Image (tube, rainbow, N blue to C red):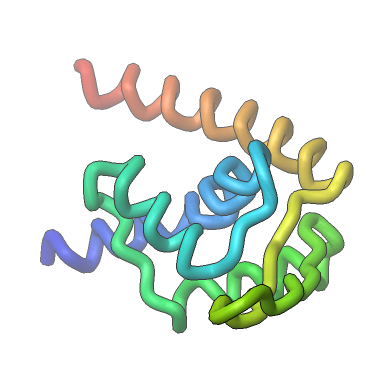
Length: 111
């Protein structure tokens, strides 16, 4: 039962977290997965099958753009994702909504 609720809660914040990680610099998929794992204290352990549909949706919504890197030496080309100006504005709005929701939840849970 606990796993079901955890999945539901995490699902609702993934777009926000991906945009937040892209705010500082462009990243490729595996890098996003690793950074999310590390920064969340292993609370968010994403799989490729979870991350890439999010990235494709954010790209369709023009909140991120992607571009391929050039192969250098033994390094393979990688597809990097970068937040757009519209993505930055959306992230600001999402963060405001998140603060309002989390504050409301805290008020109820503290009763």
